[in-house]
Image (cartoon, rainbow, N blue to C red; front, side, top):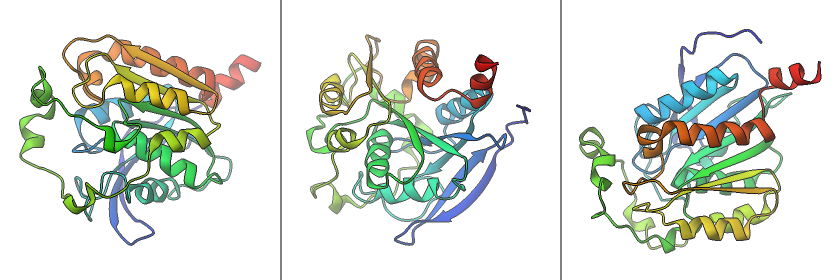
Length: 262
């Protein structure tokens, strides 16, 4: 497979409910693509997500990421999973499916949203799902912002650029990722951290118990109350070792498949 530079292409696209979103794609014109779903108060251009994008691109995947509604350069207001499944499906539908297969990597709410979206449209060719620090049920979140590094992980730049949120959506019923993974028979990886300040490992327990096989669980006893994409900054080697191993088993770049069968 010829390797191109990872020069990104930025584009706009529209959801089924007519919200205009911003996306980025890095492409080798590969037959396998990873869709990256950022967490709340995170965007596709954040350093952690750019690092993940570059890593996956170098492995041989095409990679696409989005700003969910209310975030970054996207319009609309964030609803904590109630409407964002439409955003993720709209991103997938930007890329012709003829011969192309998808995997999803989602951090925090991004993983829960991706699971819900994939379960809603089984016609899309998703072949694997990775959920990192993702809540099984939004209503069961019990944040602990006093934990070490919780606000440090947010960062000043992010703190000064908060997303546009529909706060009326917070108490309203939302899709539950634990119900979505129960319906998904694609390979799934759930990653949790020991002292996560926002999504406790119990959410991973619930996802693991509810999920249809195949399901894999990776629990990292990392210090510092890390949550979601903070692992990319503070423990990248451990995280990418787990991610790469899972993708190699269940969703390797087709170049690797052809070489192993030669």
